[in-house]
Image 1 (cartoon, one colour):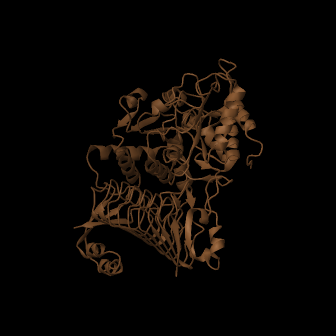
Image 2: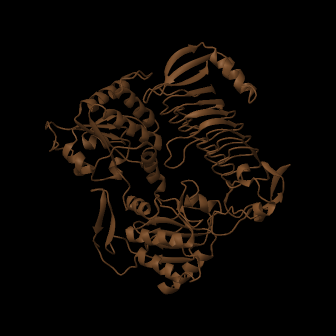
Image 3: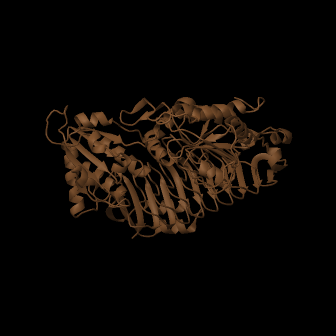
Length: 267
Length: 361
């Protein structure tokens, strides 16, 4: 049975929920779990103070209720499943390497930051810097699948070097800035200058803005690969799969950097 | 104190009470010299609070690029003596550094250059009249068009194809040729008028030019010891401002420890505002308990619980501060020495008034 943590009242401070992962809770009693410290200030805040616990197998952890102050949910997840029925704060799914994290609400900035594997799904909106590296880090997301059903903020996909990001809603300015490699699909509208400082990688934009002049037109694209990728996307999003099966036009860039990236737009 | 005049001792004791009873106090502003910064960060550590600088937004643009992408930099002196080709990028540089032309001795030929030809000076996206005042060749670009103009310039340096054409594209090509032909180029800009990605693009442009010739960045850093605070913070905690001690050890998070955000979100429940160089006031709307260490003329947005007027470093008292002219720390002698209390003294006094049993680290 699932381990369920029900939020008692709005948290009085930002919480670090990164200790609540399946592989870390394995073999711990309910009492031991209740004693885990989640505080980020000098005031104490243990699991027992914040949540009502329903014991169960930690292979699946469910949070009933969320808050903008829930930081680092699923940070470092390697296996099993974590689900949040509500909003989360900064760093959701950061550095996760496996397993599944589902946010049934909105996520703050840096969701999926530097994630390396597994699947992160956000049903609401995501803040700025989706999948991006944090202070002083060189690489952003390096593997896995990141799905945002709502909108994403600015600089989504910053410095991503592998993996797939799918945004069903709109994306802000500077989408896929400094993109190194990987695939990013946006079904909604996109803000200014997607792919600024992009080296390699693939963006597929259903409703692109006017592209920067450092992306050169390569004409319509005929290859069987998009249809193969469409099959991979079909279980996640019918609309994305349909986009991949449509006629696409290819732009190459960012010519100011390496110029080996590509942006596909409907032909 | 609450509008009434009291002794410094009493005010400091009240400030200490306010800060130590708060759940998460924040030290903001931090407009002070090295001694003041050291005292403030020590206090933040004792209180297990957080600290932020009033110019963090600008400072971190610069720092974020440096720590994620690297950078080649030089000093104003090197540019003055060697640079045979200068490129200024972005508006308001003469506002950020008013004595720019004299400091870089732009009208003279570079003294240590191999060929003593007149300097070539360009300005990409200057403010109105700025380029002419410096005798620079102007390549117009609005602030909004600047990121793309820098990208187009870098593509031109790499001889890449782009979709831009027309007269501005030709101007950028000529500029790229001049930079490549230079023996020692210098790109002068300020984080105050550029965003992070444009700064990273400029850094990349300089890297590319260094494949064949020499070129370097000259970032005009913020004044009033803002950069000194960054360096002091660096040697004390390992991080720039926007660092917190909530868990007893320093954690750096540019989003979480933004003082403005912490206060507006109700996370920080007491603030110590420090601004001794200028009459800068806090910008937050939420009226958290406030202790202000400010210049006497400062107009605060709401009545603070404790207000202590302090002297200005380098004017009322001697101060160690970062000099951007020589890119290191110097002693600034008091120009009008007075008895006005120093930030470092006041903060140390508050520190001494903390209850003995409080969790000192």
